[in-house]
Length: 253
Image (cartoon, rainbow, N blue to C red):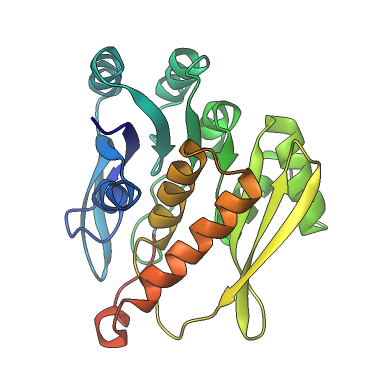
């Protein structure tokens, strides 16, 4: 029997991102994927048009029954719920989980309506997670909302990690001819930088793919630095496998 990885995230009916993308990634790493939907969306390759958040009690009942029945070794949080009480319940229920928890704080899509406006409701999930993986703009929005203006990016990342006691990866920082990610490893008190090829087109679901891959690699016992590096390479191969004509109109979450 395969070990189980659980995605608690949004549902993209077009299949480009969210839980559907997570489960495919879990399977690539030989984990059986399960999913709990935080929010259902009306969207296609051109953007997100509407979002409906599932009732918190229903979500908690789903989680309760899955934890009773399956050997879940890793949880990836994606599109977070707007309910502070639900996120506090996640913290209470999963604080002694014992497995890997990765949180990719999806605040809004590249095109379409915002998912989460009150960033303070996400604080329980930051405290709960082993690793948080915002993209550059998400990190800017999160940090300025919670702590104020950023004067130095690395100082802000370190401050965020210390405050929430969480490892932090800020993804998709743009260089001249490349993009790069910054990891702050809380246990080592050290920064690592990972550079990648910059593509001339967008592919949807790269954030979902990255955080799901990272969850799986940590579940397999790889060190954090190696997991971050391998997750980035996995996403690069995923993007390279998409033909430009298929991706020019697609937008990343």
